[in-house]
Image (tube, rainbow, N blue to C red; front, side, top):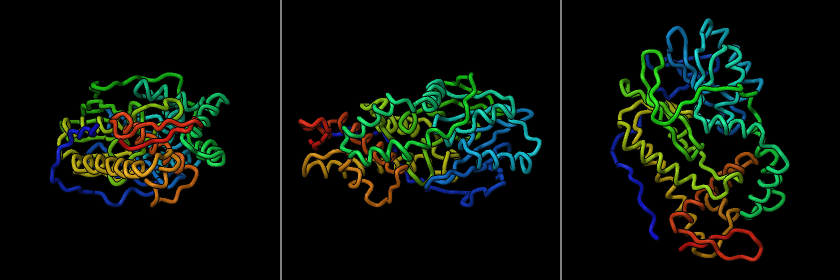
Length: 354
């Protein structure tokens, strides 16, 4: 079966990055009146996360909180004693459940006595991440990696340091306020439409202000890198890449080409539809690499990781992401009829091109 071509519009719009230099430590950049940009460090290869503050009456709504560690607490403390002195945080809107975004939600909410605002799925997923370290869940993850051809040594690494980042979350508030796809919310004088999408996360929140053509894209559309789109043991047959491509297709048909995009990582940019097409093409290129490799002989996901990620040095943290992303491409191609499962006697999944 031939893969369906996603409904992406091809526009010759140029990608533009008005703020090539990001804010440094203890620095805040005003992007628009009532729209502030700052960064918090991450202890990974992807070494930062963007935080945005939106004017909200007599205070500021914060979009995402940063990673749950002492370094980020110290950085926030310096900001609240420096350029953000006397700033009141009226609410914390967390886009999704990954620790670089929700990690300090509990700390921010306690400090400012403000509500936590999330989609229901992402709040519950955050709770799941905090309680996922049971032996039963670890065994499910072990079997998942082994079925995809990872050897015992690599599986041990993936279950150790490779998954440790998920624990870096302060205690979540016991309650939250739900926002859902299609909602409209007021933040100060601005009106935002809530858009959610799957793939990178299950129900990631994005915000669009039509009056100002301002799009807070979270990690769904990043300026210069591709967001991780993975499959994990908790839902081993998930078609996360299909969900992600469907979300991109929806964004390109509903949002204008000249919106200012504020991503979760990287720098703000113009050229939304061009960037969406680049991201879709990137994933199609990887599918082509997998199809070519599986045409020669059936392959496991473990054998396909170096085929797709041959350019990248991978530590345990990055290898976990690479494995999850590879499996997402395999599941997508199985759903599209571009791969089939090869019968095996050892229980390891092997894939052949159709």
